[in-house]
Length: 212
Image 1 (cartoon, rainbow, N blue to C red):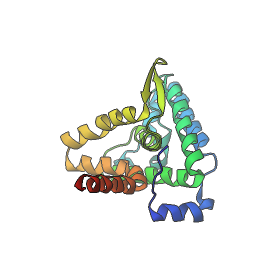
Image 2 (tube, rainbow, N blue to C red; image 1 turned 90 degrees about the horizontal axis):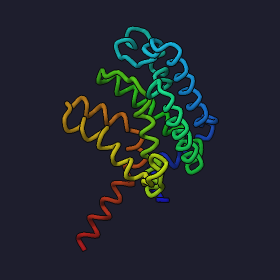
Image 3 (tube, rainbow, N blue to C red; image 1 turned 180 degrees about the horizontal axis):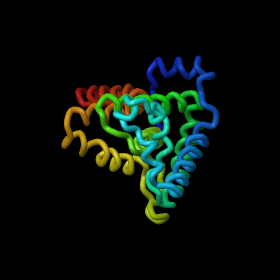
């Protein structure tokens, strides 16, 4: 597992904000998503009342800045496997970071997602981007950990994360507008805040190595 050099403010937060942590956060988020899934199965039209529509929020429907977290990836039962996988990612990160840093990571993700939507005016109709940010964290900390694709083919997390990054980030960034650039950067602000300094230090170290 890689050792990450966190920014000083995160080290301070981990030491001094223990009271800030959300107990059983992985279980809580999984339950919220599971409830959202079964609600969408029973009443598909209900999902539209959970979506983070910026115009609706500015019109007074403030609950939408919270309820989008409950929107499942789909109304197919395969989403239960995704939730099981997501729960495993969350619990692993909690075991490595502790509940305080995991809570900070989640809250920054939530706040930056809401800010991105309200600032750019793009609705948030799924929890997928936030889930991806947690997977990116795991793949950065443990890049060679493997999952068996289709229960047969072993694939390292770093390759899956790279593929997802290309699909979710590269295409919109190269083909989209400046607003979409801002939107995508804000969606993954939690990852940048946690890992940006480490990537920068690795980049500088590589440059210095090549100068020798």
